[in-house]
Image (cartoon, rainbow, N blue to C red):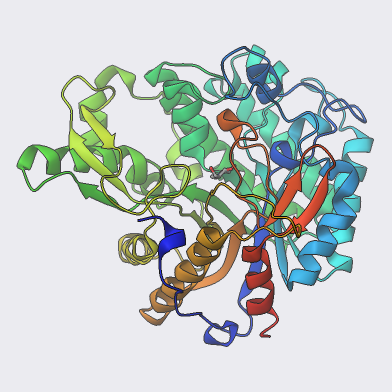
Length: 454
Ligand code: IFM
């Protein structure tokens, strides 16, 4: 069954949530900004990757995207009119540093300063993500996140940004979805930089986590009243069967997908069972690294999209386990299972396992094939239902004691969906890429009436 065929779900109400709950939308720099060669921005790994034939399905790239670099006032007006009180964005590192050891690019800094002022003028609390995958290519040329030097470069970047924006930006996310940076980008290889080596991927994961751990005190030094956290992409897991082999495979997958990140962040180091399983592929960890990674944070960002079903799969690298395609269940146009209940399961588990303090849903959203009708309307019933149902579940997870303090819908705008290019749309606002016209979809209108309590 597709979501669109479902009966109308019960509508949650904003008043079901705390009055100080944060309601936002999330975006990321490479996916929306465009202006690829403007004001001193240098090449990122995604420019290079997208220019490599066969890497992005429609052969596109982020050089124009939603042209948010120039059209942000209109985009923030949309966010304000929707009734958002927060907005999550990311900062393009290649706009800020053009070379190793260089000076920050004033034009890049000015752009983000204007952006932040634009948010504040419209009542949008800025939530800045430092790294959402657009590493400068010159750093990749020196080994990228697999090299420890990139941690130092990240700290310079974090320092420059927090000095410049810290008087107005109080919410900082160090990294978005380290799993994707490390595993998709460096082992599975279908994201930039396109490496396919497991040991490299785990070294990348370690350096990303280390850069997070080292950035937190630096951010706090520059912004004493900062709230700092990290955003992880997480899935509730199911075993393909109750057979011991599938249950063990799920356990292994869990060790890498969930505990590999959450354990060290909470002072437990890397899961020993996985270290034993992977042997030589284990990352180099220097004395003090795990203490740095375990730094206390102010919140945990959770990005949730769908559950995963895991089967034993001997020979399937790296852990003899694989994620099965969803069976006869409701899915989005990405082929991702629609499971609002999965959000609650995941949140309850995180809370039980780690008690991470305040949790923010830093991304949640869905992809459907939208069309603009003769009246210029986009009736994206599937996405609207997805949003409504996930908010209803969120309400019950909070009632069950999970301390969720805010929700950021992915995404404010349709945008460049990485290896899928512009073929996939996640926005609450439709973008016509030929004209750059913005049109609120029915999902965005529903979110607006929910937020304005109309
Ligand atoms: O578009 C991405 C985003 O960049 C990271 N989280 C998942 C989204 C949908 O795939």
